[in-house]
Image (tube, rainbow, N blue to C red; front, side, top):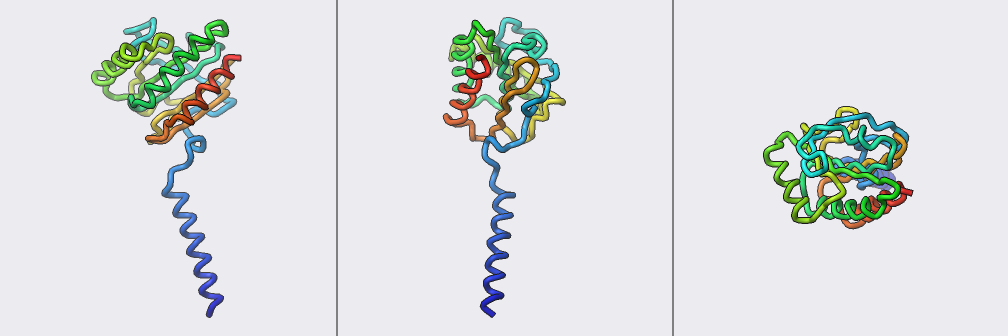
Length: 190
């Protein structure tokens, strides 16, 4: 009889573990979203809200060519996204000699409410080196595989090859993730 209790207890623990892994979201660096390292980033169009091509649709992927690039895909403007954009702005300014580039892409179906948010973000926080852009649709560029439910996806490429990917769940863009992203951007520039 005691053996049956042990087996049932072990099965219950196993079932709990399986359920736990299904219910609890994965760690930020385990979420699948966006192009993975080794992939070639395809072109896509954004609407430039704050960059030097303000008011135009263009392909920043095409414009930057084989330079080191950090692309941040976000679904909403948050204080954490603001912090990341400010830190990226500093990193791009510090790495002008190697032509480090970055841009933020807000994925949205509502340009009318999103555009003023990006204008305010630029003005309030003096973001000068990182264009803030809009993509029409919250699913992101078709070939980029941005996962639904992931709040922020950061993809870095150099010489037309993805070198880094970080998918961040809702509410998980914390100081640790921001530091990691900025450190990787600095390494990408070297």
